[in-house]
Length: 107
Image 1 (cartoon, rainbow, N blue to C red):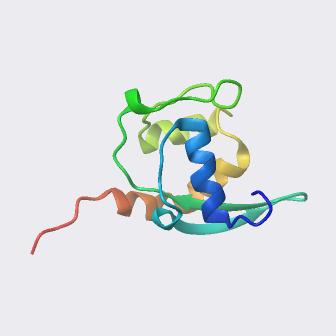
Image 2 (cartoon, rainbow, N blue to C red):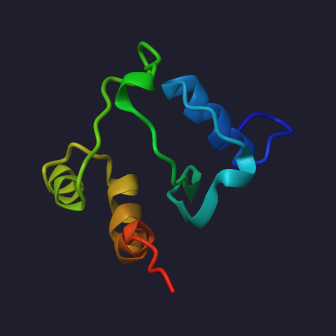
Image 3 (cartoon, helix red, strand yellow):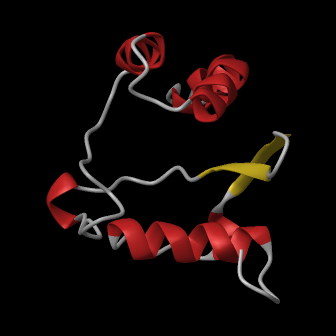
């Protein structure tokens, strides 16, 4: 976060800076907060369809992008390809994230 910025404003700015994806801060759903000895981490979810070809990676900040299944994300956590704090957050939120991906039933 920058001085005077809310965490939602920061996540929207960072998403755009690193991927070129624009989203309003209000579009992000707050999940929870983690911390370690030196930092606090606010975690958000943005549910939006984005074509991979529309993503513009920031050189030196973002190495690659892909759509990954829940199984692939868990494999990446087990093999150390995702940092521990994000992997732990994903595992705590996995059930809830899976429910968000279910198609809405129609009455």
